[in-house]
Image (spheres, one colour):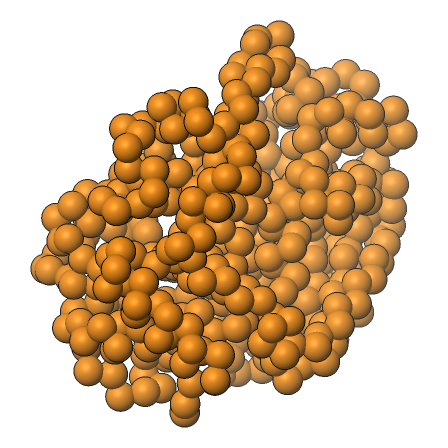
Amino acid sequence: MKYREYQEEIIDKGADILRRSGFVYLAMEVRTGKTLTSLGISEKMKVKNVLFVTKKKAISSIEKDYSLLDFNFDITVINYESLHKVEGQYDMVILDEAHCMGAFPKPSKRAKQVRTLIHNNNPLVILLSGTPTPESYSQMYHQVYSLRTNPFSEYINFYKFCHKYVNVTEKMINGLRIRDYSKGSKAILDQMKPYTLAYSQKEAGFKTTTNEKVLYVEMHKTTYNLAKRLQKTLVIEGRQEAILADTPVKLMMKLHQIYSGTVKFESGKSQILDNSKGRFICDKFKGTKIGIFYKFKEELNILKQVYGDGLTTELDVFETTDKNIALQIVSGREGISLRQAKYLVYFNIDFSATSYWQSKDRMTTKNRLENDIYWIFSKGGIEDKIYAAVKKKKDYTLSHFKKDLLNL
């Protein structure tokens, strides 16, 4: 095992930035090897103890990357949800999928915990992300606000930062006038350039073509009747449970669930209504190793019903057996590789454009020439409308839904 030529160059440049600034941001696209590159930088800096913070699903693959080379440092790999358990001292902290700390205007719990960690250890820091600001340039502030030498350190909080870097506007939400901090200036990225090393799949020589195909499933009549009834009455009461859609947001969410065969009741409990999509996927891709993305938890239960022991949710099992894997879109959209899958199959679709662009790249490798992706939509459902929005890099919002509602 050895580094690719471009990785060696990034390792050298990254080490220089670390020596100068104490942190570096590797904005390397998926499958270009940012994990191994960050470990190479750590080796170059002669650190002794590395803490690698990532998503839970990615832990095993990062540990495998660490085992590929004979590194002279110890490593602890944890997920962000376990930050409160961190003990010991670390001279290097690597923050994977760093954009997940980008919430604003208030810092997320995750960003606050990272800030405490860095304050207690004073380590060198490497941030990793293929999409540093997937929805707004404003997402950069809380990714780096814990770093003493970050280019925005003169601003004690996000609101002060906004005075220079964000065009703050107002928008109406449910009749209330709310401040919108999402219109960050491109100058934010300009300020980050001295600390950032970006590298694309194209630069790395990737020549993968992605083929997407939509397949439609006829759901049960009861499913369509339920959706139409809810759309008309906004409430359906059963003997023990109720489906309530008394706001446009609730109606959008409930219809999204129902058209794929599940529903979450007002009590918080959920139920399978229609397993047509699950049976279709199982029949259509029988004998083929696939990765399946789902959105709602009851959709996973549908898949478990139809696949039985032929399905796993663990990456290690998927890689070492002939089982198919099912992953929730948001938790599985980044930090993992599904290169062993012949196809990616989507049981449902997420409202987020970020989820669309990140998750469908999970099979990509430098040597893979084609990715075949299948979207399983209900005939006459809402998924088509969502798909049309996210393909244009737009989140599917309430304003989209209100326009589309007339055609459902």
